[in-house]
Amino acid sequence: GNDLLPTVNPNFQWIRLAQRIPVKVTLNEMPKDLQLRVGMTASIKIIKH
Image (cartoon, rainbow, N blue to C red; front, side):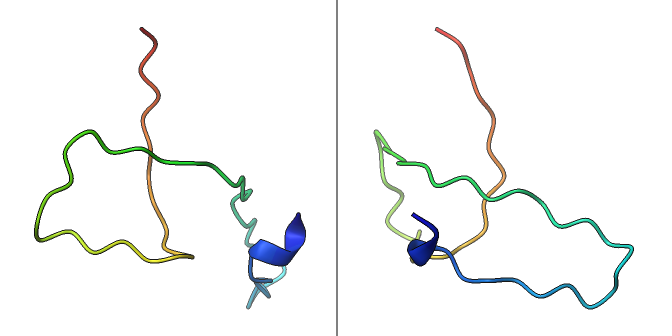
């Protein structure tokens, strides 16, 4: 539900905020220097198999 995502208040009325969609992420190989945290922003690419 919406309880998991923080509310973002826009600073300006004319800026459209990106939509937030909760997703589950699985990494096949986790880089040792990568630190993931809840609430981080990510850009994704969907690859169809």
